[in-house]
Image (cartoon, rainbow, N blue to C red; front, top):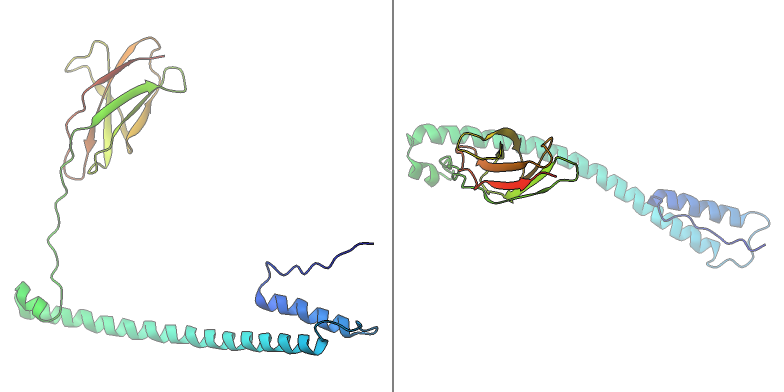
Length: 208
């Protein structure tokens, strides 16, 4: 036989580790007792009890800390309620004067910022998709865009030949169900919160 001791404590919690340690101490002390154990069983018991006492102390402190956090939250709620009420008092007394508000230790509500207009989509590129009759489109994303409107046109392209295809949330999309061998034209424009950008320069590809 060539069996080896497995501690199996790596994934255990501290108290679970001590339970295994205590079991080993108890079993090694039973008749027939382990001869000349190293470290001595008395030392093992002492280290076990010291670790266990520290875990008990930590549990007590954690309960105290949990109670302190509850008291903190209650006190913060009261303080912030008073802060808000005092702010309302300052608002009334200020008659809208920002200098008065800041002089009393409060911030002034900032004016809503306007969103920058979206620009023209650049670098529209068309490639053949993984599926037959599918075209992949990609372009440089405008930082102010929230979505992108994609339109397609058969050949020949004219000012009125484009039709809506899809709204793409990102800076790429797949255009499916196109006629193989036909020439497809695509254009894209960005939509922002408050504005719509210019159409990109149209791009074309022979569908395969």
